[in-house]
Image 1: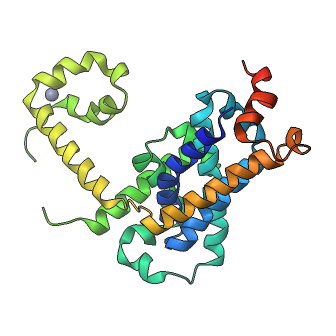
Image 2: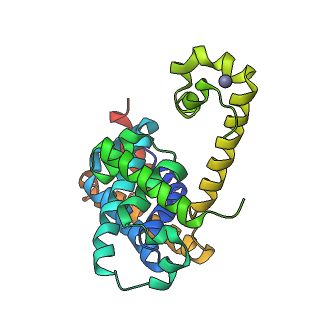
Length: 149
Length: 104
Ligand SMILES: [Zn+2]
């Protein structure tokens, strides 16, 4: 039983969760709030995983995926409410003009280096849809942001 | 179009799934056309990586989050059902009395 270990673990996860949340909802305060809400929901709703973690830490990756899942679902909800907000930020790079699902997939795959099967769990879609969206989005971004070689 | 090697089309897959492309490995290492192609792919990959934003929380956000996480995990002890009668137990006492017996 290691509550302070859990606290440490969650603190360590915060940076990557924040990065993910910000990719989805590009606003500092919103992203941070989404992470805290996600951690809070995780602690309340995933009591089994929490107590497994407290016993031994082999469930680390499973917890990470769960946390990402909460962040993703919350962000998608907020995104709908906030579509008018932070348009400046979205315009600053073509990346933010991609739709929220595609931004999420790219981040999870290439920044968080998650497996396709893990991304499936987080975004709740089939692997061929994810691969399709990923390739499509990657080509678009590369096309739009291509620098002169 | 400059000259190409037919094996170059497998490079991306070979990078992703090295175990499945073991047989090709030696060729890819020895063939200068494939080597050129590998370098080009690596370059494309690194520019691609630069295009993906990597937002990091500011120090203020981080320390606020730390406080929140501390509260949230603290509440975990308080609200644990086996704990409701003895709210004043310290974490250490709690661990010794309630949890250790069930530990594997
Ligand atoms: Zn070759």
